[in-house]
Amino acid sequence: MKRKNENTRELLANILECMEGGVIAVDLNGRITFFNRSAEEITGYLRGEALDHECRDILNSDLCQDACPLNEIVKSGQPIFNYEVTIKSKTSIKVPVNITTSPLRSGTNEIIGAVVNFRDLTKHEGLWGKLRKERNKAQQYLNIAGVIIVAINNQGLVTLINKKGLDVLGYEEHEIMGENWYELCVPEKDRKSRMTSFLKLMADQIGMVEDYENAILTKSGEERIIAWHNTLLTDEKGRTIGTLSSGKDITMRKQTEAELIRAEKLASLGQLAASVAHEVNNPLAGIMVYIKLLLKKYRANQIQSEPTEEQLLRMEKELDRTTRIIRNLLDFARQSKSTMRPVDINMAIEAALQLVGHQINLENIHLEKNLDKELPLVLADFDQIQQVLINMILNAIQAMPDGGILALKTSSTIGIKVNRLYKDNVRIDITDTGIGISEENLRQLFTPFFTTKEKGKGVGLGLSVVHGIIGRHKGRIEVESTPNSGTTFSIYLETMDEQKG
Image (tube, rainbow, N blue to C red; front, top):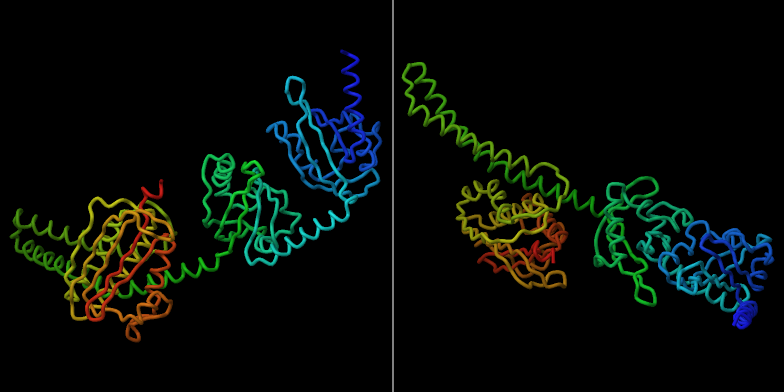
């Protein structure tokens, strides 16, 4: 039996010696325990020079220094197929090789090391040349793309990036390849949460979000906003091994949008100023009357406790009303950072009406409200939604110069198609009985700088800003109008319940 085992080992050794490719066996410490003849030819080291030395000292590749495959194999128990590196021979000649590394197991199936099988690609010039040509062609395609293209492996390391990506980030290729994307290119405040989400994605604990926007950090320390489209990378067995993303730098667009929103808010404030001044003036005038009356009674020593208390309570009520109006106006005017949070649309409507309600009364317009009390929440920026509502209500008021009816309605909708997907939504209907919009103007209604108002009454940014805000909330806005009969704008915003699902 012993003789038979020796013959088997000798046969296996002879087979390995005759193989064209280099074969190296290493133990768990990375020390070489077997080194065949082809390995001698490729590396320039004799077997005696290589045995009991660390594999990294013999192969001298960048991969050995950065991420030794032995560690991954011991952890996963799975081979790593056909990866390409450049090793440095004993005489410092660079040799491109194709490597497959497999776990080496004992008779009890315990991993005791690894077997490294590698082929010298320079001996296959035709194949190597074709591979290089195809790779260069692919890289040219990537480099000519006008978007960032980046691939990240399951450890978060950059394995591919194109010229556009390097230009936006400000790095040279050698400075970013093989580096951890999250440590290098993600702002510190977001780093931990985004890395945690990525690792959960790699572990199949969460699903891939195909489209989203977030910030990246350039080499100079500047933050840029990128709109990403993402896909998962898998191996031949369908296991997740990384992500491939294309990204567009939308920093300037975001800044322009913010300025447009700010400009439109200021325009809305200008329209509200006169109305708010009237509304504040009325309670202040009433307070002044009561103060003079109380002073007169005080000087005549005629103050009576019950009437005086009643007058003071009326003054307090009017002051509360005035304070609330001014506070709402200041809240609306302030430049606040965009914050997505659960929003009750009915509350946003009431907040908008507190600012425009007096103007509705001044213009001889009757307000009808039909707000669903069981309305689900939406994920939104309260300030921006309030701006949308104020803008739409002011437009409706201007469309009824001789008075009319303004109807505000909220409702829940099920299975409405928004952005190619069927979702549950909150619907807001804003209806006026005004002059209406012609079919020709309807087609251009959300175009920037298009306006149907008289000269000096608007620059045409209002509805384009509204459209932009609703679009960024992944919602939809529709309009139906008949000349001389009125207009209805309908806004759809995805409900929180649907988003959580």
